[in-house]
Amino acid sequence: MPWLDRIVAEEPRIKPGSSGAYAVAILLVALSLGLRLAADDWFAGNPYLPFWPAVLFAALIGGLGPGLIAALLGGFCAWYALVSPRWSFGYDAPGEVLALAVYVAASAVNCAVVQGFRTAVTRLRAERAKQGELAQSLERQVLERTRALAAANDRLRHEIDERAKAERQMLQAHKMEAIGQLTGGVAHDFNNLLTVIFGSLDALRLRLVGRDAAAERLIESALRSAERAAGLTQRLLAFARRQTLAPASIDINRLVLGMSELMRHSLGAAVALETVLAAGLWRALCDPHQLEMALLNLVINARDAMSGGGRLTVETANVSLDEIYAARHDQVTPGQYVLIAISDTGDGMPQEVAARAFEPFFTTKQVGQGTGLGLSMVYGFAKQSGGHVNIYSEPRRGTTVKLYLPRVASGVDEEGRPRRVDDAVDGPADGTILVVEDDDDVRNYTAQVLRDRGYAVLEASNGPAALAVIGSGTRIDLLFTDVMMPRMNGRDLAAAARRLSQGLKIIFTSGYSPNALFHGGTLDPGAPLLPKPFTADALLGRVRKALAG
Image (cartoon, helix red, strand yellow):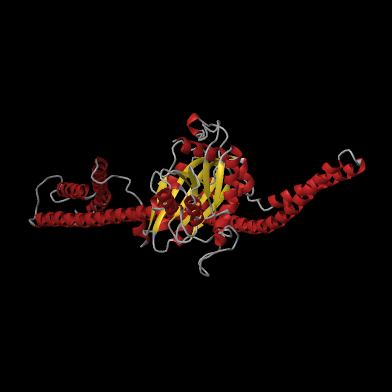
């Protein structure tokens, strides 16, 4: 009903029960009395009728109290001024008393009805106000929820864009790694050819010095062309390393600790995680996000290699790679590096498989269980960061992947400097050393370093051959042996050698991290171990210390 809606919508101008409401009631009664006296002939015989509107409006405007006051005051005025005899409180007929009583009772009922109407209007007004507040609250909640959903949608879109960007970067890295594999092979062949060309031209130049000036000029021209070809080859090798990185100074220990919970979740309950973090570790220069991705790839690969459960060890250390090691490994710059070694107790790999582990799309997993790109990404990241990565593995012995990241050049304190192990290298070298190593290149390198220093060196490619040399009666002062070898490992060789030669000094070497060897039971804790790769100074210092002890 529109009239009711207007009444409910409009707040009363005079507050119910206020002094203003009572004044309005008195004013209405006075006005009704004046009108009644002015129109006396019209209302003859109805002294109370003119006051009904005053009572009704007084109750509507002011409520029950002003309405009752108007009724009583109207009855008083009618009795005094209009009931015969007028202008007195007497009466001529007993029925006048009954009429007054009926008037007062009817007025009270009317006031009660009007008060009930007012109460209903007040409640309706309060209910509508409450509904309005609720509607406003709901509207605010809807707006807030809409804004929250819009913000969540924006975040989701941002995350989708970031994920798509990361996927594009990953695909780009994989594609460039595959291209790098191809260009690397071509560049390798060119370098082999250029090596022969450089060597032949140098030999010719030495033979023709002072004999044929024209020929010398031709040789110099050919050498300059070969150098330009070598430069082209180097640019061809650099072509595959075009992924954008954001290198920063990184605390590797803190990063590993921050990732430990993620590593545990990735490994599952069947694989135990152990972290061995070096004190005084140098800061490394690399992209932290790419490093996290590389470590996660290595952890997942290690988990997949331990289908029946096992142990994963993450170690950090400060290492130095010298010119000899760099010359024997592709794209390695001599210098100081921060090492992260990840070792598992899984199935391991034979050498022919480990040699291809970093190739794009090469995998030993079942079809559909791997892309063969995880280690390739680690390899590409390490190379582009100016670092190095190497893998050491033996069937049923587990695998260790060593990731070398360049040390930050500035901000190095005294505790961060590499510890020298060759303090006693200078001085006469005396003694006979038996080098046992199944890798021909490593064995030849180790023996040559020791011979150049003045030691007598014997060589053996496996454990039985080494025992044959020891059993021949030849005097041997030191046994330098690899740990992981076919037919007989270094630990068994050392035990058998000590039975043949009492007091024989022994040094072990291995590409596996020390903690992986000690925890796996391959070596006893505290056994003298020189981790690979080792520099010539580190080798000579450890040998001299062992012989002096």
